[in-house]
Length: 427
Image 1 (cartoon, rainbow, N blue to C red):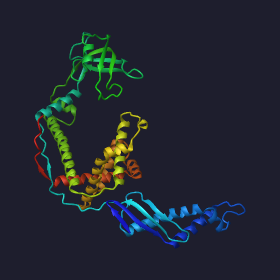
Image 2: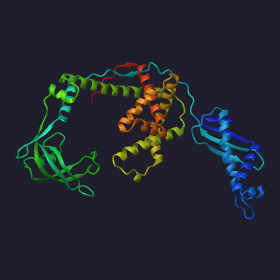
Image 3: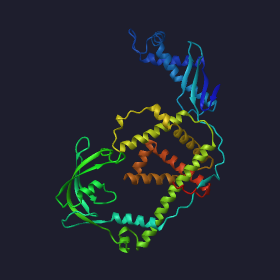
Image 4: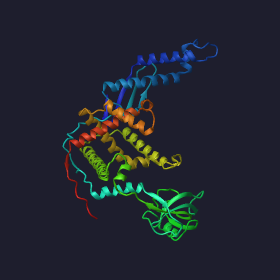
């Protein structure tokens, strides 16, 4: 008999006396074959001596063999899909009698899926302005700029100075040094202290500058610190931008005119904006669907999700050079802080899975192959080797799940009623 409370289940299980006796006999014989008993060759000691000397070990092994087996049978009879490690309670064992115990665990939730077609969502086809196209074109132009050396003279605003930079004070540990660094004097992205120090300098001059870095500066050793630098001016250069003409377009690739470049830029910006707009709309649809359905979520699923979120955060920190082995993690606090988001994510995944099943959304072999090939190109490895590695690590199933999720989100978006987004509120 099973007791149900949300996803938590409790079930009473009985191991018949004859099954327990047979398992005890089997375990006894296994131990007898290996045991070294003084006065007997291995396998020749009387079973009564083995049972007496190894009584606790025999009982423990017999229970370890039978409890999972009879629990699984009981769950199958009750059609229970267990998703957490069972906790065994109130186990009663008496020689020659049936064994009774209670198992507590969580099961996958059962819920009815409501109608998810026709949900309203804010979305409008993006508009790309001429100004945005020109801004992107100028960014490309800037990336193709050349620096021309100028004859020695005092530095002026707008000059690009090739310098070597070394910290004098303000940083911990070894001084920081960088050679062949370009600084645009008076540039919008240049710290004023560097521009002030370099104005009027000529190649060969050494100057000093003190820079106060913001707390959120990208370089950890500099963030939030006031650092003094020694600057050696090597060369003054002028930045020359290519002309925006058809020759520039041909240099960029398979284009015949600058207008073709502008049109391709317009399409690229549209794709970027539309992707962002659709992601926002799809997230909104998922939030709506989660809010529509009220059902319990297994704590085991939530804990797995929190661990996944933590793993992602640690990987991100590692990529930034942080030694994660020195980080102390308060699991209880972390669980409290991320519990609601994790629960939302789990509910969303369960609902999307149910929608995919109802609508027969699946991943085709062609889609899986295309993703494996994309990963192989990214890693610069042979496709066959990447596929083999993914199969060993369970990565193919991850790919399948991602494809199904993406297609399910597209299904929701395609069947949603799009309404104009609310106008942005001015502050």
